[in-house]
Each structure stands twice: as C-alpha cells, then as structure tokens.
Length: 334
Image (tube, rainbow, N blue to C red):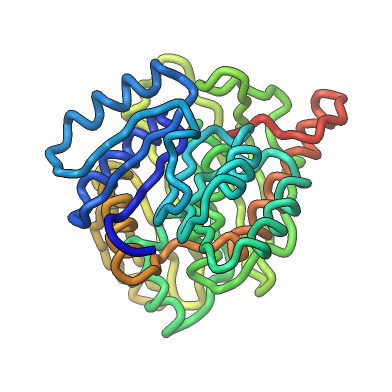
C-alpha cells in the first residue's frame, strides 16, 4: 500500500477510545476509521478524540460500507465474544498489513484453530496480540539480565481481586517472553467455587489460584484473593515474585512500580529498581509509529501467543463447566 496511511479501530468502548488517542498521537499522517455498532460508544469515543490535539482525519461509523478495502493497521478492541466473527468479516472485506488483537483472544477453543487457518491463508498480513509488557524497557532489561546469568525456576503472581480470568494471560506472556518458552500445561482446579460476575455485563471473573508449567520447566502460580468489603481499590497491588538460581526478584506493579532484586548470597544484598509502565494510549502511539516505519513491533505474533492462550482458556473452561455442571464451549471472560 502507498500514499496516506489508513488505520481502523473496531470497537469504540473504553479500551478502543484509548487506542484511538494513541493512534492520534502518532506523527504519521493518517485517516483513522472507528467502527462500532453502538452510537453511544461512538459518541463517547468522539469525546476521547477531542482530548488530543492532532491533524489526522477521523471517521466514526457503524457501517462497513464506509471502510476502505486496503488498510495499514487494524486494532480489534471488541469484547472477546465477537472477536472471531469480526476478524472474519474484516478479512473478507479488506486487505490488511497489520492486525492487533486484544486479549483474551477468544472464548472458544475451536476459534483458536479457525484463526490459525485465517492466519495461514492471509499472508503477508501480520497478526499481533496486545501483550504490551514486551514493549517495556524494564522487562526487556530484565530479560537480558536473566538470560545473561541464570534461568527462572518459579514465578508467583499474587494480589487481591486483580482479575484472574481477564489479566492472567498478560503475566503468563511476560514470563514466556523472559524465558523464551511456551506453557506445556495449565491447571485451574484451585479456583474458588463461587464464580463472580464481571464488571462487564454477561461476563464472569475468577478468584483463587491457577498453576502451570512452561516447556523449559519453569513453574508459575497465579493467585487472586477475593477482595474484603470496605477496602478501597487504591490499596490493591499486584506482586510478581521471580525465583532464579542467584536471586529473588519481587516486582510490585502499581502507579509507581518498583522491583527488588534480592541476592541469594550470604550478604543478602538488595537492589531496588523503580520503573513505570506506560498507559495504553502511549503504548498505541509507539506501536503505530513502529509499524508504520518498520512494519515491526515488540508484541507477540498470534503464533507465539496461541499455545499459552489456548491452554489457559481450556483450563478455566473445564473448571467453569465442573463448577456449574454444564458443557458449554465458550468461556465468558473478556
């Protein structure tokens, strides 16, 4: 494709509006299309647009007929329950260079296989999964540090009510990135029996524990305890405890994130490293700039994310059916 760049955002909800702000911060001149069936979502997204100074052309629409047939970048930020049919409709409508998919990718195990086929027949389109910690300078430096000295034995992610179903895959992907290995197994038999309703209507959320092992032997345990009533969300923090042969690394992700590198040597020395994780609009600005200039970014491609997503969704789906005495094929997380 040549000439002015074309960007499409499908899904104008909260996340889609932040993606739009990021796209508008990109210095490369674009025509940006925002597609959503909800007029209310489109109206709210227009308000987000007004918060960013830019000179791009923006088209808000609920009609595929207004969408071009050649597109440089597509961001699919719909809910997980419609992501597969939306992806199919997109690829039937347009030739696309790069597609960024939000997690959780899909609710059905069959859809992961169907998308494998779509990926194979739509070359050279690149399919990326939005696991943004791979773009973080802190996690890239941590990867270099670990690979240069040792290997990761175990990882524990724990905190209060942080969205075990919705957010675990971000941490699983981060460890997968650090150790260059995919999951070999995942179990969810220790999730709490009382499944919660998600903040998003029609979806569920889990608390409790899930466990997995990577192909290289690294063990991972993710724990989300149920929030006590009356405790404000501002007090919630997520901790990641990484154990290697030489040190324990405790990462606290919050507004002001920090990592504690604790030596296993006799002196028990501690190195403290502060860092910041970018907001989604900043991340999207970096992603679009990189894709326009190099046709590459640091996110995992679909083939890299496929195994971890499928094993995780499969484990939770099995437990969801056991708890509810059902045989559904779609896990209602997003």
